[in-house]
Image (cartoon, rainbow, N blue to C red):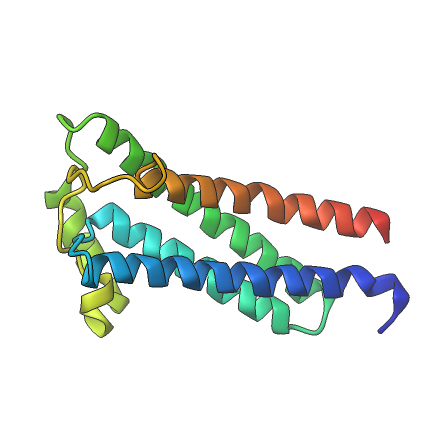
Length: 168
């Protein structure tokens, strides 16, 4: 490998780790759904899509040979994280204000109409309400944890790019 591109290996390893973490988060969500009986709402499903997109773009970026492809995938990771940030932020707000509704009547047909809801309905089909308060995990709701994960992704990916490419 060209020493000028040593940073590329670091970014690829980071992307692989990020993809694995996102898949683990999705696995945790499925565990909570299937084993603990916590039914996903429309905003939960949108957050699943965001984690899945982050994982897909991270794995593709880690596999691509050149700087441009890796950088493009990192940009898509950040955009996906920002989308997840919006969904998780809205969900956290709805949980903090249960008198408001997340618009299950409006969001449910849209989310259930997405392709993966037809392909894998047990994973990507709406089954619950956004206002359902499930027990917190280490003091935070799942939406708040997702908010933290998306914020970290949206900050750490560009920071890692800046750090890696500035040093090299």
